[in-house]
Length: 313
Image (cartoon, rainbow, N blue to C red; front, top):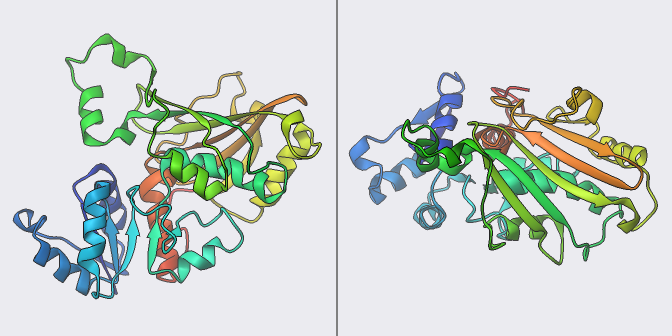
């Protein structure tokens, strides 16, 4: 029996995570009484007992939990932004690189990717690994996400009966080009410059589509759209959670929706366009492969359990 503790189990990701883990016979999920959820001594005692501690907290609180856990022996999976670029933490995206799965399995500290950043990395890393995209490439990215990615506050705003008409239309945010995922996007992908990033929240709860437009003539070596698609297929060959497809299969009516992966834990890479201009898209659930689903996958690897146990793939 593996003992699990979720620090911050009342947030959006924490609640999803608890739902996923409760009922698994090989796991015991520890719960703190409501009056002890912020008690440092109670949390540290839970960490000392737990084999894995999940951090589903704001960044500063996650850093404090890491300090609190020192000497307890617990292994940590952080769902916040706090440690995604820290050198002593392993990035929790098993399919990203050939060695990533083994690194996660042996790690004591794993940082789950951000939803926008994870989709961006899934699109850019294969190009970087193949030598098609240079470190000094100047990129842009637009990402459409469901409102659950904004946590309880945004969920309440969107589901309020008294909301204004603006909530019914897509809303772009982070207009000052200072989104907190930009550092992660650069660090993980080995880019010298952050992309021009346009995140957009839509009037649907879950799902997202991260998009990167490319001029093929700007790449480091000549490749047509079929070659680009083949590159992605080779990079993700043998993985269950990521598949590569075409626009006619992903959007047979010519419209690419961001929410078909609601409730799922896998990801779809879509390569569309022509031999001059291509749009590559990562489509997944912002609370699945983009949050709690990714955390469960990492936990399974760290505990030597079947990697995709309790995942909707």
